[in-house]
Figure 1: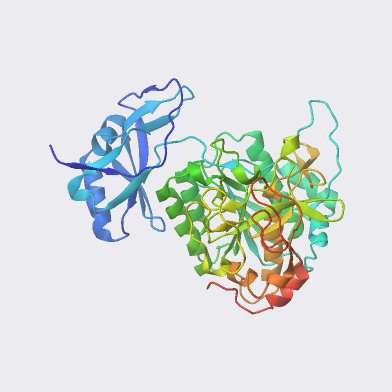
Figure 2: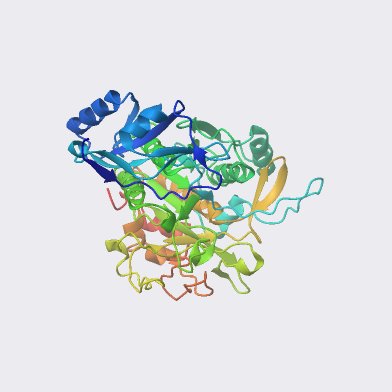
Length: 481
């Protein structure tokens, strides 16, 4: 019998009531190659074919070879035991392994856990059936004015919205934009790897919120909604599909989903972050919300956690504020079970060069200083939050999931006034553009408190769009490309 070696895979916590899968059922895996060369692809493809599996796709940016076949063949080839949960999902349990002679070709495997990996960063209290919902709050246009966004409608620009589920109703968009006296923007749906076959209320509301916020700020921009299955493999499919390059490449990507960094395996964190790094080379600015559960990010292990993929150093992580008695303060409504801005110190990513002079705090977990989250902030509280039209009603929603697309709209307006897109902007924001931000000096998100400088609650603070535009003058390339 040949010697086998184990491969790293994402963490798997099996649900209750699991049972062995039918050996004839079909399952799939993503094989992460150690390098992108043809030799590795040929070797693994030949091995899979010899085991009765078929190759269904090659994802070059993340070096993933997708294979599919019967449970019996997959178990023989890679060692997982495939189990079926009461909900119907197929899970690969145990350790993955391959023959020793192939060990130099594979880094690990993904795709063996179909359960949702990320959650939308949305805070909403739905009206009861038959009850007229309250309609206070502000529109995204109001918030754009509050933060001094320069004028513009985003004409000629392309924005991508990254979703791990959801759908949006044309009737909702029509009612919303007519209510604001704006044209309905061009919205194209781009399902990836099957998209989302069963949208939940949260995912529907998240997608609608993102489209309506960005569309209100830049109604003349083209919007593409990329939607993939909610899993680590789905996230990689999502990012890679949105970064294909070419004339249809969006110059701004916004994402309002994530999960506590501790829920991810090291290979997953590395692959997703490396894929996001490619955005800068394409002139793309990626904005991701920092989470809505405070400094613990909803974890119950007694430790503090940042949200991923917001913790990747290759994205602009967006935190949240709320209105205080004399101005904006850190968003923290945890006492009322209404959320708080995510933020803190990564347990995985090192401190980026551009953040070294920012004054990031020590980790509440181990006292070390690594990548600090978020970078910037905007209003995220449900109180006085974002007025949207969803599921046939006007509602007020909150969450850092609203703050991220709002600032994506700002970057889009700035891009429209330039000869080149801003791209990877983080080094500039922590450098020449720092005076364009007002620090938030009051409040906390749990383990971290606001200060007169950078804080792991609201980052550099809230922006003045006109001041930022002066720094990022037309035609001046952004930092990072």
